[in-house]
Image (tube, rainbow over all chains, first blue to last red):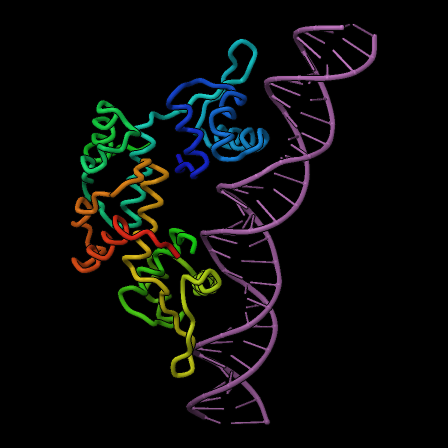
Length: 123
Length: 123
DNA sequence: ACATGTATGTTACATGTGTAACATGAGTCA
DNA sequence: TGACTCATGTTACACATGTAACATACATGT
């Protein structure tokens, strides 16, 4: 699975805090911040479904979107890629250094740390 | 100045270790690793000059390329962007955590740390 | 003077991403 | 039932990036 772009990451963040959400609901969350029209949000959502970053379902007659991978898994991929290509750190990463990011709970940091430094089966 | 792409970063890395270099010399350094034809390397170099990531001069009759910004400055920008958007860490970053990357010397880490955590005049 | 190599300039085309409008169909209210 | 709204499907266009070929000009050996 390819890494999410910056915009895609913004949408994923919205969905990690609450999912599934409809396109309209996602727009309410990220539209103002990204200064996107509803069309733009919808296009991006479609592409994310194509790339299997999101899963599409129907609830109460509307299409709703759910992230396919957990926050920890996604971020571990993004971080691994970053440290590999930018800093050429191939080995274990010092995840403790990031703990004061409020992106993840303690639980999620543990998961991320595991993904990043122990297991190696990508998908 | 916009952030370098992954490919552009590979070229910058080659030039940080030795500059200026001609297109041919750069190709010898990065071509095999990236599996690029000479044409591809040259196109990327041109675009980097357009974006003012590289400066173009003529030495002994050949065109040679030099990075416009220092390794520390470039990497501080890339890192700042990453931590902002991915981990939403806006404040000072724990650069010490990266010291065992061999990308930078102790000197350069100091410069990077300064750029990242003290000064704030971007260009 | 000609052929050949090397450097440089120019152009091309596919895919990804940002950014959006247009069209259509179904539900709702007057 | 006609007008409107909302959700969804489809299409568009520009710019960035990956990836490269074609064309031309200069130097150099024969």
